[in-house]
Image 1 (cartoon, rainbow, N blue to C red):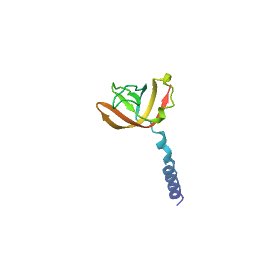
Image 2: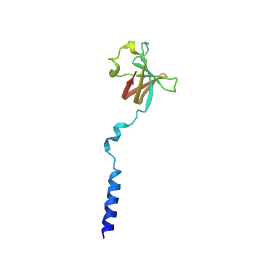
Image 3: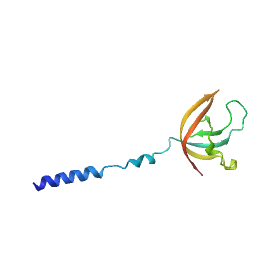
Image 4: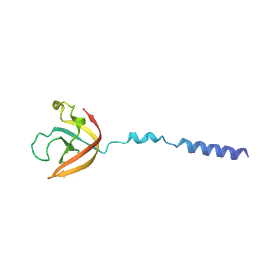
Length: 105
């Protein structure tokens, strides 16, 4: 009888030792790494915002976000990790929405 109780207690202790905290989702890495090149000063219908270049890509993307407004233009380029979604493709200019980010440098 004592062995059965010990086996049950041991099994329960193993079961609970593998439980994970639900806050582990906060540790997820960002989807993309790239370079925040600077402000797009071109004058066209789809221009403006901030130019972002993804790592391993030659394409320049545009992001329109007020979060970058406080950055000093002299600090560009900046390394950035971010989560994003494609907002629009305007005449070949890829416009993205930055959902969450962290700037390095």
